[in-house]
Length: 174
Image (tube, rainbow, N blue to C red; front, side, top):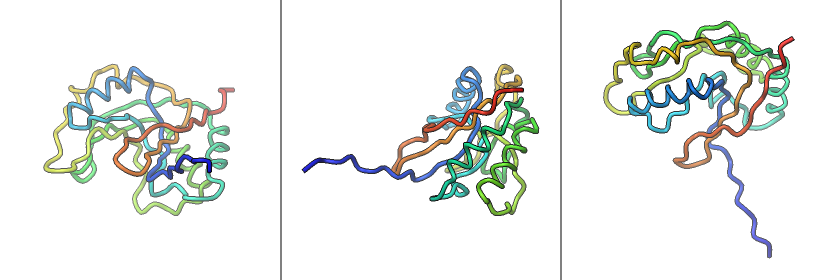
């Protein structure tokens, strides 16, 4: 009898943009200081509950990425969601256009709240949410950068951290 590797079904997945490595590294240090040790800095475009569980959704994501040209982003001011999440605002119209295209391609139901492009710094899991002073964020983090690809991030069942499992490169600039 031949032994087979068990199939690992992702417990959770999302689609996101990642800053360049130097920005991600600086943000990961800030996030670790706020109590997020396994930080994977990213700008979520489609959250875990919105990703279809079956069907040709990967093909739809691939088609949207191929139709998207790279676009500039900038991380801005510190803001909060209901004293549960501290984040950096994401400035740049391209992220909204990408989100809109993915909503159509994936057949997502209308959101009850508007989409707010952001990069989460810390989530209040227990106790109070730490205050984050913009001065604590290195200036190099707030420089503009260009989004060139969308990533699929997955977490297998259990306590494992998220990891990028696929990259959907945007079309070459024309």
